[in-house]
Length: 403
Image (cartoon, rainbow, N blue to C red):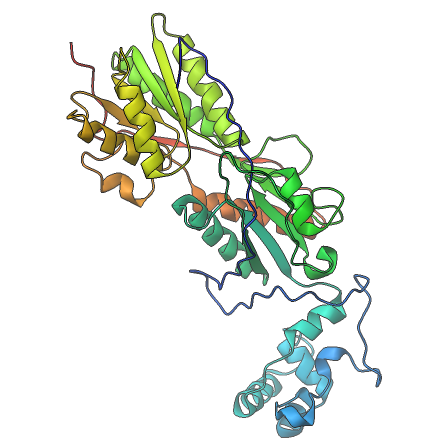
């Protein structure tokens, strides 16, 4: 613990390297297949043609597999293979009659035929697969980011491979063993959240972050190169701290997430600026991993000091739960004896008693905005940096300090 008047230090962490996890389309409409199987190397835009000269996705399967082929569908529907391909590719309007389309669809259903999408993507020179790198799906915030990103991807016929890269303080950084034989042939682009440049370089097997691949960053410094999608977190922390100061609190401590990233550095800077604006404010802080047991221990350290705070500002709602447990352990009532705030507005923020004053972060919308920016980049457009608003939610965990 470090005691000071208005300034705080910077956190320092490193990132461990867990194995690849493949998501199965959580809460997203429509069928989507996620695969981490590397695709054969090829030059984008160059058709993959079989020895017979027919595009790969129109070829008959190995007869031994017993799978129906586009040739079988064409024979049953009484049309050509090229007509079957047009129908299944959605390119039939103006070229094929609706009656023929119905015949092809009915024949496909009767035979149980499904187009070979992998072969079609190979022929077109694209995988229609993007990589989402997040710290951890077990955190409700990043689970919502994934859901939003998946919805945006599905709406434009893209699949998402998820790589959770948790942040843990005090761990030695080790290189990531990339699961991709050649990232540029297995992926079309990367959307990365709160992830170090070194991690992306190792993961993708490239000389630089996303080298050769379109890249969009979440929770990252704008103007650093890649397009960004962020939440105005500094505005949220400023509003939260100003609220406590307006209630009359002059001994304000902060539970800091022990994570080295732009978003947490922004919270720290906004907190410092807010308390500096009010003379006579004493501040204290304790750094902690983003877990409830660690947050409880850190909060107890602050509460057991010679001049305990009347308010605890927590970097995250998870840390606020630890603050609640510490207050209960010391027989303190919230908010009568101690005001507590969080950031995130996750589901349990309104389950706590009293309900938690916090800052709402639009995680689902952040995932959508980031994925939309990445897909725009793939379409050849230049997306602008996005900043979504954060909203202060005043509930029952804050009140004026006791006289």
